[in-house]
Length: 470
Image: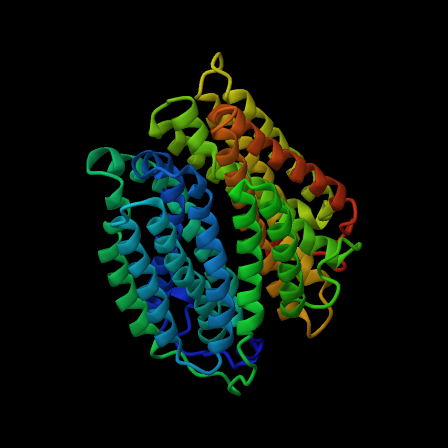
């Protein structure tokens, strides 16, 4: 995202914080937009085993997640660049329209391939929403109100995490899984009207941005990651080798153009911090995508149990975030991230135990709660450390690199896990295949523990207690 927006003067009208009359409509609209994107992401994870049973083609199971994530990269980068030259209302309208179109395609999909296309369209629109929201906050909210607004947007993910999986399970059981997609469309339209009306009053940047949109680099990034994952999913050894090498090379070259120099290594300090984020999201989401599948398809437990497991991880993720906020200034990032990675590995190991027929499937609720506590403890310290160690004037590029690696880690984790499960299902069976996918996540988590040794032991400046709490 261009840094011009963050340098723009802040609108001071309407004192009173984020709920001041001048900002109330914008606050409500942004929160609703983020809430619906979050709800849909969590709902799909809950009902996907049921969807897969109806539509078939297990090979594309992981692509339902990976297509969304890779497409969101395009939305994030393009919207972040255009935000300094195009009215924010138009950008948000385009993003929500694409998201709604993806809901229609997904809700009417006759097969898994069309569902993947719908999820890609959704992801493209979903990537626009946070990019526009961050720029709007930088231009419309005074400095003292921004931390609270970011906290409110974080809560917009927590609430869907608490109720979204349960609602999705109830809707799928009562009227069918398609209405998890289609039923959200009227609400997205209402949120779109509110936020677009509010964004009309957002002031333009102090100086319009002139940076070119890095279309080729972004498309190369998506094509490289997508090509590597598609090759892996083919199951044909020559295609896996050739496609994996070509895709990885294109991914690396493109990522170098979108991130600051040397941010693709594990050198101590900032580079290890950014690389650790990719490893953390890769290992957690490789498991998260297949927790419902393990519970519903392998163990034949009700979808409600899968919903409870995802809700439990959301609760412990939130609890872990609060714990790290109070501890990072005292203990430093290294002593939080490495134990967090260990907890994710333990949670994945317990999920392997859940696959055993003699073990109650309800153990998955506790198992995934452990993993949620792990990512909650490790995730935010990496963000704080990135800002702490970024050179003056390089904060924007550093956080952009962090976000790119974050989403790439999720896409690669779900994609590789999906390829493992699909390849194993035809041979050794669904249960062992899911166990291998969880084992892949454990290996990545242990690599994260090793790389975490290169994280800073302390922040360069001690955080005030109030800032850490935020």
